[in-house]
Length: 170
Image: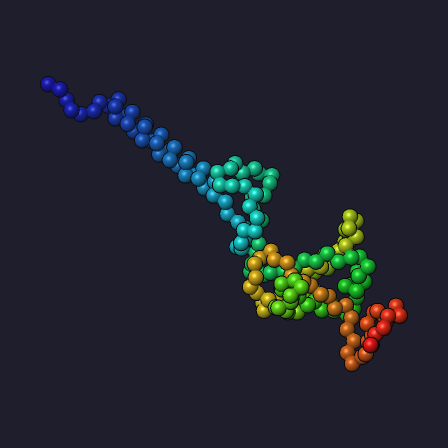
């Protein structure tokens, strides 16, 4: 008479196979989590350096992400204006978008002046927060920035070309 039950050896083999399959499943789940790319900040992807399916190197960026919660502009300013930005008078910033058109304008304050001047281009960096009234436009867009270093009210002035002897009024 034949028995339809499994032997002790077959039962042990089935348990071993089950544990190996569970272990492989957990390992695959962990590898999948390593394959997921998460940004440390919220924002928009401005530039992608690799396509889906490529191996990701550890020494190169995968994306450039623009943080759109607190937009700012960074401007390279020639070193001859260093004293104007570090003087006692505050510098007023006028921003307009799009450049040249200036349909949307707003003012801001200087948030940060770099403490160093670059030896390559002899410029220093100035950072300003972008006011909320200039939103929205694409993150990474170019805007026009005008710095008012000194301002005189209730005064008359002549155009610069008057100093060169050009005709001012016709």
